Length: 407
Image 1 (spheres, one colour):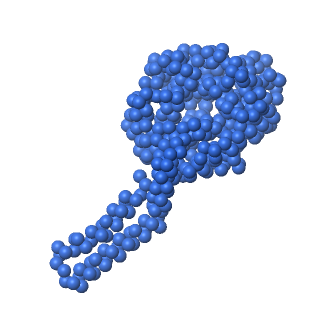
Image 2: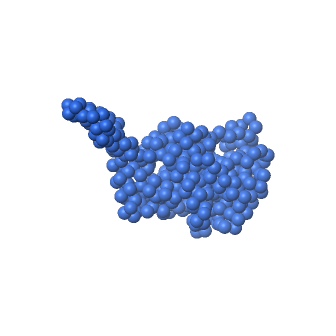
Image 3: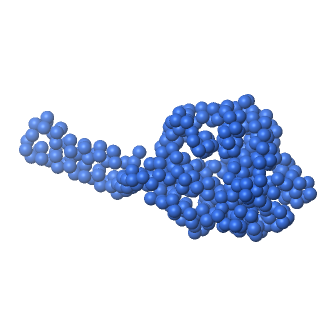
């Protein structure tokens, strides 16, 4: 099994990627000596693109970094968020006016910044005023008294995805903020406890549902017994429906729009499922498929950088920050008890025995036993009633084959 200390090299690797990007990338070059920013990709120093998604990712990682360079960059990243509007007015922000206005009202982007600020320490930067400003803007944008649309300045139906981002961000700043969003929390809780998904469920809706469970679970350290019960049930239903897809590198791209302008946000639902397993049902994280997926991710992070093959070759800053967050959550909640190691061994054996080779071997043994029983019965001129008991062995083998397959 992956031990907690095995996560440290990956955490350090991700931290260094952000340090290098924010220090040497074109995104920080024209911000001024007091500021720093990050864009969509890591390792691409020539691209000037920068924005809230990338900068939020950098803040999330570097605020929990271990190096002096990381701590120094946090202050500069906060400065950029606070002064972005001034940079735009001065013509130093490389984004067109309509998209800049959208950024200022984009619930997901604002929530990601607010969530990242929850990890900034006072010794790195004073963020109280910025936190209050963002929190009040988000709370003031609640629609239908139960959640958020994708943008604060439009009227429309409540959408669970931006609602989940806002709930996670606001709750991360303390119980006082969480109490003010009790109805959005209820809305999400009712959503995730509805009909259980199946393998045929719409993956767009299911990936959003997974993130909703993630937001509700990690919005604070301690949840009530009833909350945990509902979330565990929702998580286990989701895990059973999509565990088989853990063998692949998959995320979901969600499209949303305002007027003629389209936006996209990636939802790496597999990563959220793994993090949830550490808290809601550790034996799921201890399963063979989960451990194999985690080992694959760790290998990629420490060697080439983690990428989703269908999302392009560059390393995504946002996905890297989500991975960093995932590793810290697993490290914090990881249960190293003997029972979970035993479960890993049993599940590994069960998975091994479910390979196609063993399936055909079992069927071959079943057929041979059946033929042997019938032949013995015929040679002894047995009565018809004597055939049934002799076939019990073959039938037992068939049911053993069914029972040994992972559920």
